[in-house]
Amino acid sequence: MVKAVIHKLPKDDWKLKSVTVSQDSVGNYFASVLFEYEQEDIPSVSKSSTNAIGLDYKSDGLYMDSNGNKAGVHKYYRESHKKLAKQQRRLSRKAGSKKNETKSSNYFKQMRKVNRIYRKIANQRLDSLHKKSTEIANQYDTVCVEDLDMKAIGNKGFGNGKATFDNGYGMFLNMLEYKLKERGKYFVKVDKWYPSSQICHCCGSVKKLDLKDRVYTCDCGYTGDRDHNAAINILTEGLRILQSL
Image (cartoon, rainbow, N blue to C red; front, side, top):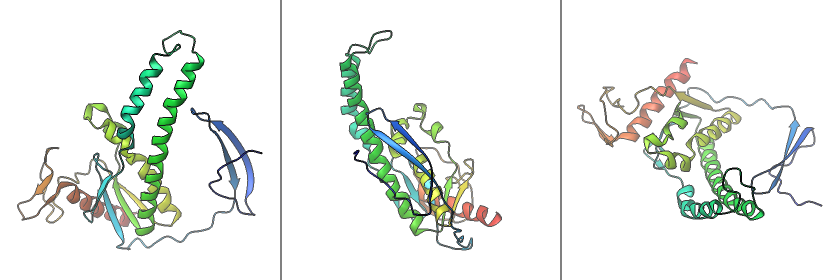
């Protein structure tokens, strides 16, 4: 008998199609079970619903929403960085770490220790993002975001590599998209070139800002957080796009 953690039990009318067994880098085994079943029709929420929110990406957290709330994530990768670096240094000293060198049993043993740290970081981040995305999907009918290239943003040349890796914003958006769809709700992407941070959400005037400028000040009298202003603009543009679909 093999002990297993089962995430979801199938219903009686589901048909088993296949089972795929795999092993991860730590040595844990996983069985992915594919079932076929009739998908229930989920009625879509009205596009005119005002229960909507806009999200602006923040590399030092997760996002700023159009209500002015900043969502942060635990810095799991950064917290484990020293421990990870220590174990990686030990790995580099084991027989087999160099090219064309036969890998010893101690090398594989140390490799599993390194992989366990990576696995723990990934599991912690995944759990946090699932909880946050479920909360938003339950609370709002429409979520508007920027269609960002997270690989480009995570490029070390921008100085945001570790932060982007830590917050998992791209994964968070993927979760949001399918969870909203499951509920008959809307996930709207605004073009990445839309100047959300440069437009005053009060009067519509455009003002160029440098990355160091964190406060948006407009001649119309509006002064506020740059990211909050951007999130409101993302919401407005997203709702416009939704109505045109």
